[in-house]
Length: 148
Length: 402
Image (cartoon, rainbow over the protein chains, first blue to last red):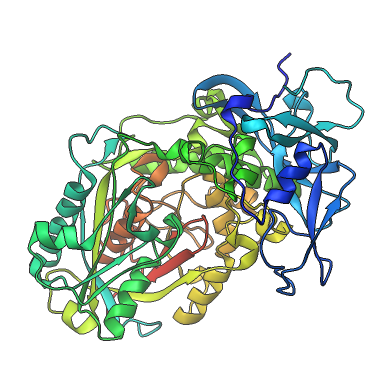
């Protein structure tokens, strides 16, 4: 049985700027957070400098439960330099940050069992330079494989 | 016919040979672009020295790795002076809309003979894995780690949602691939001429990003295409029958704008090609309806995006693309029945060549001249689209001169 993984640690590099860095600093502490407008309360991801609803620059970083739901997904076979890898990149809804979505991975799962609406919970996958990447596993799934 | 803009016309088209990715080497992007421009001038009966404007798209990029530059073209080709040189932003979404940029220059009186050109030489970086090769940025760090390594991988996620919402099937994507492959069989320059595709081939093919397989992805080709636009009066004195611009639009809505990498769109945009606002503007400009379009050259980097454009442009209702396609309505026929719309009669990017939307412009012009290889008899209006990609997306309706 092939289980979907994340890309290997050394393959994933991220860059941050002052607008996005709080997201990654929180992830490093194994917390999933999302920016909420300090003025109108609208959530937005990826983080941006201004709220698209009210143009306020005020941001509150809210700790989320880590629960998510598959909105849509692909089953990707191969990546440059990694022809045999199987990935399930997924667009996930975050129920406690309505309107915000993340593009992430469902891991530790047989790709054929993933479906839209599937309930997920966050895990954190080590990537380059000591950062952690939020990824997701099916709720209640026994940990079939380490995220590393 | 007096509908629409009709103040400028396409008067010349030119192309190089088409090559499999990387195989045009040692030809360069610039040299191939120059050949296409010279060929377009010869087609129009113009001297290259008559060119005084350049209207690009994709930021004058050639693919994602290289740039085209007006000063280079002037030096190499001996163009004395330009009075307009500009580009639409972002990528292939602007291909059809670049003709609108040319029109803007001409109508404003800034330039008189404007060339639009695209060239592609992928010896160094293939487009299909362009996202994986890009250095990390604060924005793409919310996308790149997922392994969605190229545009088709992203589109596969949109396609999945469309299947979920509307019951769309892989059979419809297959029918799009088969239709375009069949159209390519009569095209001398088509990369897949002589290589027919069957339903069996399609369903046996390697899955790249499920639900999409190899044949849902367009080719990666090298080559160049150029198109020359001029004012309608001058156009009437040139060698070819003028092909008037009846309507042209580029842009799009915020809900679609960050489709590539954001994925926050509401359902009506997520499971779409982002072209509906363009369609509405085109039909309004032209005073036309979808039933007035005789041939549709739809940007086909990935087969599901053809299906979703059929919905965006009103050839069928939202969610009905599956049944519309499977009903045989997009197949080429010289005399289509009411309700049918021949799509990508040139074989498209799936089966002829991928020059980032430019081959659709060539085919639209040939259909309006009446010289297309797979000619739709008596066709009065051709739709040409750009994208679906990051904004702008774009569209163009071409017509016949009175």
